[in-house]
Length: 191
Image 1 (cartoon, one colour):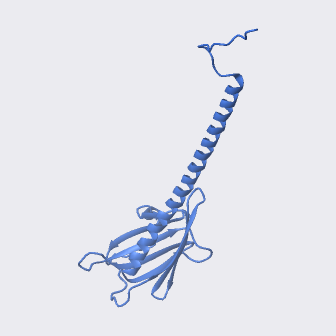
Image 2 (cartoon, one colour; image 1 turned 90 degrees about the vertical axis):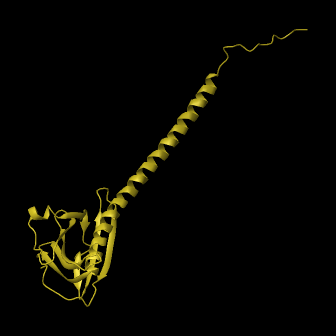
Image 3 (spheres, helix red, strand yellow; image 1 turned 30 degrees about the horizontal axis):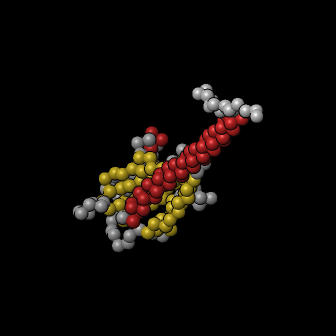
């Protein structure tokens, strides 16, 4: 009888070339999938952040306009070329009634809405570029919705509509009609 020699496991036994190649291919495949998922998640986060940024600025501008006009005894809309200015005499929110003047300015060349406040009786006039720089910037990337003006007086109501766009191209459309409170006296002190 012929005895077949048996192999003893050696301490230097390792992977065969085929096993090593399969393991490397699987590793590359898994890394590729992980990188693809990470890139997709990063792009989604950028899109969400951009849209959120546009929405935040637009909401801040809309909230300021709504609060001002709902508490206004009067308001007027003025145009200067493609720019628009809204001025209102507004009641304060403190327990004691105080009046003040608020102005909002849409500058078409910079696509911004800015706001300023003055004490009651201090007229807010169309600002120069230097004066406008001191106004508070509420939102950027603002353009009208179609051919409709951003601010439009309709009786005692104000229609506001604009599109807020950020650099990545994400945009948010904001449109509303703000109802001015009626029955409040005094006029002509802010414009």
